[in-house]
Image (cartoon, rainbow, N blue to C red):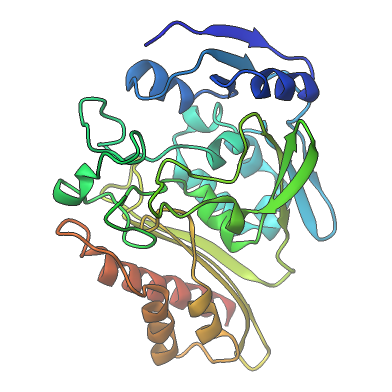
Length: 331
């Protein structure tokens, strides 16, 4: 690890100006990923870490139709929020299944959006072939142990998995990211925030250097909607997903699905919105054939290698189970 400078900003404008003005600078909040990558794994460097933990970016404010979450709110604070518990069950369950209590009390929501992949090859500096870490070097995961890697949005350039649980639920909810830069503020739908790896896996999102996430805005589900987050993993205790599903359904009085939201984790290079599956569901009754068709529609053109092919049927079965659970609960 190379030496780095540490400083603390007392305003958002100062933090953005400091990081924007120094190419090697980065922000420091909860530090649960940043410090691992710098100190333990040694695959990320920074000339300066700008501590933003004292900035006024922590509050959670609920309105009639949406909730605004400060970027420095912790996972535990958001999971404990009564509006989230009442109107965004899928978000609360994703938070509780996404990390241990200790991590949830440290990890921030803004930091969770920016967490890096858990790909063992990305996090091992002795592995030369990693397009995400060293563009143009190749992808060691394709010919190696790839059980925890992606099948959607993947290619011969990169199969690194986006590991966040929370982001899967937020993508399903059409959350927006509020971003502050030197030229002002902008809002970006979370669905558009992440960038598919293509031939540049090192570019992961649309943030310009120095831009700071200040808040996340999430629409609330209407009363009566049913939502949940289902996570399939190798063990019940804290572990990353093999497959996960975030879903929300609104059913009419006759049992027809009037609105559907569906997103997948554990399978995508980005949090994966399954819009094709949503189209299959809307207007249909939740019968077995419809649920199976929606599941098949969600996993189209997967890029699999020897270690990841099992995720295709596993994802389809997980989607069907989630939809069965929600429709039985709603009936």
